[in-house]
Image 1 (cartoon, rainbow over the protein chains, first blue to last red):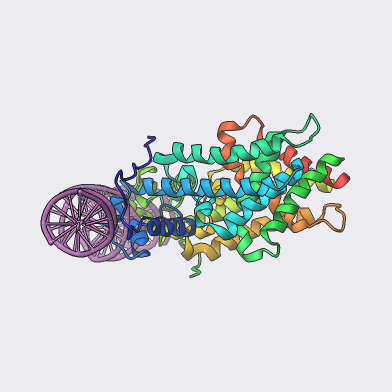
Image 2 (cartoon, rainbow over the protein chains, first blue to last red; image 1 turned 180 degrees about the vertical axis):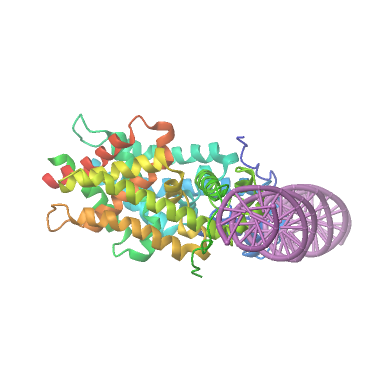
Length: 199
Length: 199
DNA sequence: GGACGAACCAAACGATCGTTTTTTATATCA
DNA sequence: TGATATAAAAAACGATCGTTTGGTTCGTCC
């Protein structure tokens, strides 16, 4: 079932509104423990509220996840947009996008990390919405890969998916074994693919 | 907390023992829905048993996951072992290993899919055990990458992690968009990395 | 400064969770 | 065939889940 995002209050908000704190807490806990393992009480407690109070802002737990997801997509899109603006070459733009992606997911934003941590299949009822938001973001990478100067027999789709897979999976080992910075890691990933096409 | 695997019954088992059915059901559901979203009652129902009966075979839900994980590692190791035995060149052996990995995870074994679907951070109490089992398997890939004829300045660790990331992430898009077979996909992945080193 | 609505508390709802306990049935083997 | 241990049923435990309901506080604006 595809349900719309919760309708925002129509009238003016109060200055003591704790909706931002709720979103921050949800993003942190969803990123840390996953969706199913995080309870509404966990989220409420981490911002000094009661579980029932969350339902003033969101009609259901799934809607809270959708809001976090949406913010994560927005943050990633903005980070990538800024990063590629400074680069001119196609390969340089791709590398900058990868670096921005890794930095945002690994170090900057719990919201972005939720995109990598919580997958559509984890929440069947919201899977369609989550997939659509992921696709919105990954379209950016499709354009970057399409712009690469590659031989005609190169499968750009596989190249893109290989790169995105490597980027997203980095989360599972980066914290403990990482001697590279996110930026250096992105450079190495792209380098491994780039040199392939100079042959 | 690292707890040991459940001790198997010491005496002879009965022929109507449904432990294999329990493991199959758990593997399928864990692979499909994840760990937290799968209840003991779900598992029991899918093999015509009651939830409490599962505790004759396993002391806790976590121990059931550990057993599935262990079987998944065993199946993957065996598939890779057979695949690389037929190949002689280092690149050929790596490609064969990737093909075996993808075929097993994507088409053959729910147990293997659990290794990709359920991550150590999903089950904090069992994270150490799960990590150790994953490491057991990935050591195989470390050896294969170490055997590659690569220039001295190539970061073999990053190459290995990039490849494993691409392989494991394939699960999230393969079912719907995949025009390649697992074998063809493995070939393209390795090809993208191999050509890089001929330059 | 009084009214109004936004934002939250307090308390409980039924459902489901992992797990335990007690009892029953049956395959195996002496 | 009878004894025994294996394997599972049956039923319940307390805890926790997402969610609802009704009441309360307080910032905001006329």
